[in-house]
Image (cartoon, rainbow, N blue to C red; front, side, top):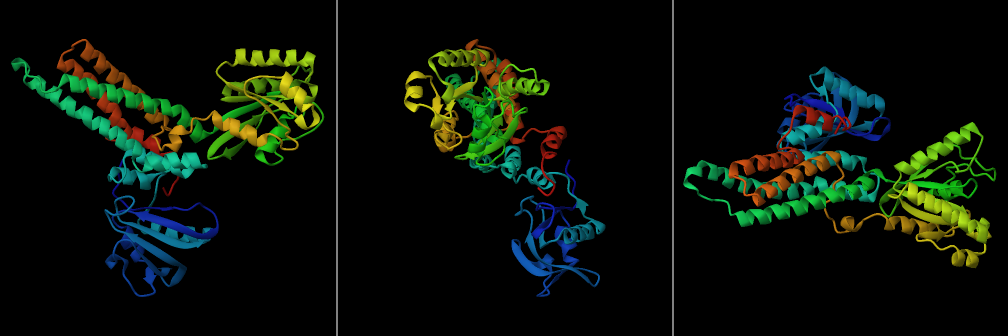
Length: 462
């Protein structure tokens, strides 16, 4: 997996810009750049101290490619643990490629996706969960996902796992030692302390596993379906939430014939809103497809906003609305349901609020903006952000989640074995399996296939 050569890649986004950064890492990174760098002070990069920046030109033969700043990071005090050079040049696509190809022609290799971070992991600059957090940090597009990625990259999650693994490993070694003295019936591991440790490990593992549901929605966004009869204001509500004209608004019923999706961030949490086709009986083939997709989107959602037209709420229609709401609850019992009485600016507000009572009912006017802030606040109530505020460890990675589940199962087997007074050799088997799954998370146990799958999702240059 590890190749001891010098790699190069563009570390900034491709395309024209004010500046671009070209990164090299490897045993010959400094000497390769030094061969084509002409310092304005006649400095040689190979003699410079680490973490220094130098002004000069990249020159091929007598041709000046660009005026650049060159940053030197000498091993092991660099991101990858190797010699690293970063060339800051002007952001012309032509200049970028000219410099990169110059070094490629002179022995550097174009880096694979994530190869700089892979080398950081292989050189023990980061553990595997921290390396994965680098990709999450780059992909973070809201405050919450950024906070989680930063906490993981700083080793918060890794440290919790390492503490548990070290304590379990200590007891495992004592139990293994007992096996060497089995004929003498010697007990090195205090069984009561071991039982307490298992209880604590199980508690921590369950807490981390439970956090995945919160972490997953924070990372990917909380899907919300906006449903209701045609022309109740679903598209207008979506536009009001997004503060832009994303959906077509018309007095003609059935205008929205497909699901329209967009995202907004509310207090650092990402929400994915889906404006669906109105639910009604229709002979229009295209609209029927849209209505079918509406029910598919409800299945994929975590929260359902059921809109009704407040101007049409009467003694007779209240019965109909209540019946429709009950049907949605029965069909989708696991979904959070918010009833939104829309068009309140045109309705009898006192009559609506006193005659139509339902938990999580909100009163809005998507057209005027009435109640939109209240709706956003209600949506935030459905997100468990307490752990985020307390800076608790939150799991967002499905690989970590899977390893935690497997580790929990093995630790519970050990606990059951203790209750059944199993011999130390049988307990040791399950302990080793639990340690294996802990090691998978931090990278103490890896395979080329695992590393390939993880780092293939990184961008080139990172």
